[in-house]
Image: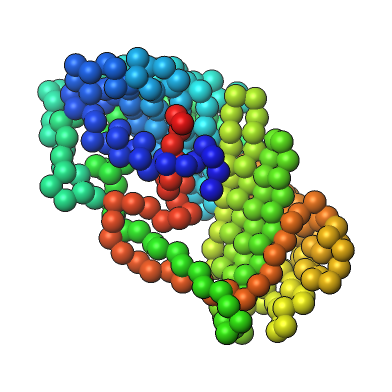
Amino acid sequence: MKRWQKGVLALVVVASFGVQASPAMAEGEAETGAFGAFRLKATNGYSIFAIAVSKPQFKRGELVLFVGGPGGSAIYLASAKVEPTVIEADLGDVGKVAVNFEPSGPPERVDARCEENGSTIFQPGFWVGKIEFEGEEGFTRVAVARTKATVSPFFELGGCGMTVIGEQGGRSVKGARLIARFASARESRFLQANRNRPGGRVYLEVDVEERHRGLIVDRQVGGYFPAGAFEFASPLRTATLAPPAPFAGHATFHRNAKARNRWTGNLTVDLPGRADVPLAGGSFKTALAHWSRTETAGRSPRFSRRNPLSGISLLD
């Protein structure tokens, strides 16, 4: 897990249960910092959930946008001015946020849907000003001058489920897991493919993190694909990955080849805001071994491993 993602859940929990009379600050306790959130409906089937937060005395404010839709998801993290009634952030080429909070009506008590016996006092209102976002390559856009303030993720989420991901390895396991990683000073790419048995469906996920000046962007896509997307035979000397859209091309793992020739091919993926990202070549480090993957559903205020909210601490 990335350094800037570690503990995001803790941040959201603090924000969720620390907010009292204001959408952005515990009443009478300016030293606790500020918090604000809102949701937006964007184009092409995407939606945006924004969280703004600052440390005590409103230092080191940050804004994170969770953008999700039919083509996957993207997370944008930027420095911001975050005070009890102000959120201001420059998102570079993709947008800008400059809003002030306007209360609407008396404070209300809101029950937490994902926490037993949890509640908070919340000042309803709107964030008013300028919110503009246009994703790279035009994958989605939104421009509004007014949007309703959100209490917090845990008080307004419609569902409270979670998915626990498990993996088990060993010689007796019939399935296989392929991992490919690439990292540089400005970008990292991660690919993982799982198939639990011959003829079984393939789970495949890709995560690309980019570091721009003043902005971190994390793009993700994942899901299940037909068995032919990931082919291997025991013993695991070779494997081929050739999934359908949003992927294109193919890549092959050669266990006995030299390091730079171990993962070859023309495999690419289309992510939100970035198409044709290469996923094979000599710069990747790869591993292939016998593993099986499980998913177990449950009910919890926490999120699944791949959910953007799992484990982020913006202000570490």
